[in-house]
Image 1: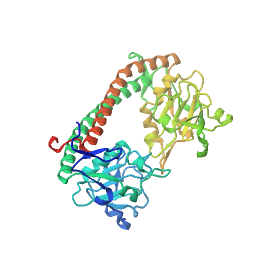
Image 2 (image 1 turned 180 degrees about the horizontal axis):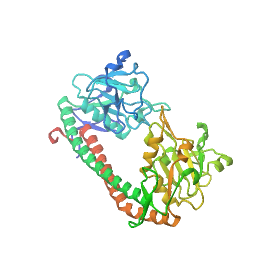
Image 3 (image 1 turned 60 degrees about the horizontal axis):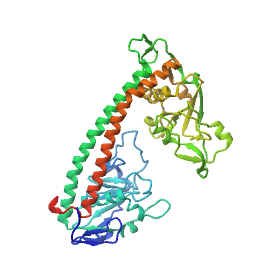
Image 4 (image 1 turned 60 degrees about the vertical axis):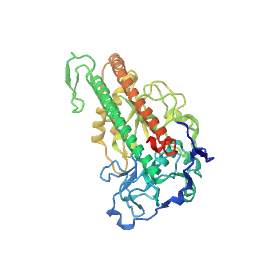
Length: 434
């Protein structure tokens, strides 16, 4: 909608505002809270800024998936209806703003602002969320780690609508956001069902084959169950060689030769042709840590067990490439494993039961070569492995298309929400239309 009765702000990310809205600095309408909790921290809920966009949430201190601080006496106290922002390392942080609904404590690495009189906190939560979307706060940051100090942030200019408009806009965005979140939750649940269906197809094919009439035998391994009687089971140590990756100082990275990192493995069933990194590696290092067709790479260390032993299979040799010390490479004996079969077998969810059961965790989960070498591998004849790969690829294609379509719908509704918030908090939606 075309804006009427506006004035120019000469600020790139909000060039115009309604004529009856003021333009003020953050420090004039918010207080910065820096109250440290001290030794009474056990009396408060521990809060965190959600990486999933859920705002300020109560942290699960019982789960081993959480990162636990040894002492929280330097955490700061925050009150309901305050706004929490992450203004440190803004170029890498996955989240920057949240609205606080609970009293609690949070790490002092965050900035906590409390609204003064005639300020509706939820409106400004949406305003700063919009600034997170368009990265306007980040471009005002300084330093190598892109940070806004309290003083710099306090000088940032923000719109000031009348209080009744702030409330009306916030209520409208609450209602619309609730509908959008409901839509996203339904789509995400649908995606999870599709992924379970996909895994069921893969698990059955790589452990039972694709002939429903085949005679089965006991594999001798509880989580594998019965397998075709002509298949073989071996431990990985008898199927090839393992090699840890390259460990070098930070000064060697950013230029040089192809380098596969943790994310390249974790995020891909099939190893990408172009890795995410570069490293200055020697010929000897490239020979020891090479990346060849048929290699299977496993994540070796993480904060949690669920991220250990995630596999990615190389389908084409990458010349001069090396891989990270956070990974282990398994190179199968020639003609023992077809790379397509490896792709599905080693990424199979059934293997999670093996690793979760066997893994020891103290502060970080870490997988040794010995543990990986003890992993049982089901070995059909090589020609049958090719048939299994082709079957799975065909059967999962429609599932993958349905997942991609649902993910695209989620992406589009999120883009719509971003545009809606921008229109609302910059006054392009009149109160009468809300």
